[in-house]
Length: 421
Image 1 (cartoon, one colour):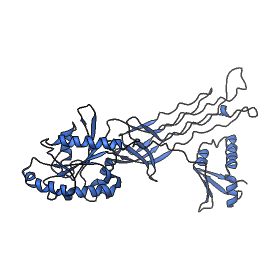
Image 2 (cartoon, rainbow, N blue to C red; image 1 turned 120 degrees about the vertical axis):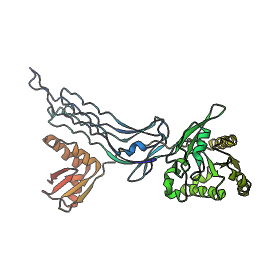
Image 3 (cartoon, helix red, strand yellow; image 1 turned 60 degrees about the vertical axis):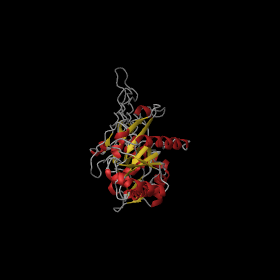
Image 4 (cartoon, rainbow, N blue to C red; image 1 turned 90 degrees about the horizontal axis):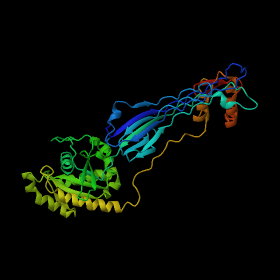
């Protein structure tokens, strides 16, 4: 997996337990219930932070756990809420459910955030259960368990222009020539292992954000040479600079190969405007090949620009062509291209009754398992309340219909009960 992807396991904090407590003061022999509620467990939040350009920080740690809420106290004191656990990601990060592949969020702007694992709510103290008929309830509620999620993060850099081409075509050199970016440059394949961003300022004060997309090779759309990871960055760009090595044995074949990989990865990329620049005009071999190269592209109806990224010649024409392409692309976008931010929603109260190999019954369902975990089993009133819940949502009816008999064992989450019909 590249620095443009990360798999995370995140867990929110459990809510604090509610308290069973009665007021104890001099001259007040029958103080009422005053057990406080537990505090809220911490959320796990992803937030896009300006300046970040990779997910490499998640190489060192993939599991994250938010803090638990504090328990309630006497005198109706509510436990302290746990702080949120905020994980910073680069703008352009796509968040998916690792198990289903469903899109959860697309954080395209700095400051955008999404709660990917909501904290458990605090349990209620016995003061909340007091009624006119039960003025001294000896029951409370444990804090709701936190949620655990497996996430897949994918980075798609936010750039106006992507610079694409085969390895060693000179993409990083071109980015350095057009912007103040200082990417690593050397004469060997895959010098660039992470996309680099740079900003080119125009005369009118506006800017063009360019991304140097690492070299693509044959089979990149299937992941060859980490290509599928790199190609994701191209999906957000409005225009491309297609840089071709003018000293290559067959520049037109190189150009066709990159376009084929783009189209195979995402057919929409074939429609992205391209400014084609033939690079390395400062080399003697280029001067000899240029007439033939230019003619081959003209026969295909592809306008080309002769440039030297190293000597920084011919770049003005490329920038002018980019301005025209970007203006046309923006006019064709009447609505924002960014995807909305979604919030994980808890599942419904559905449950399922199964028979386990040892003959016990298993009741499975997110809501019922959470309710069991929030029950104070040592308090008889709390147990009766849980039994009423089973009746209200239909668990007892489902067990009876499945053939459960008095004395059978019933398991809900980590708890085992004896069934009494």
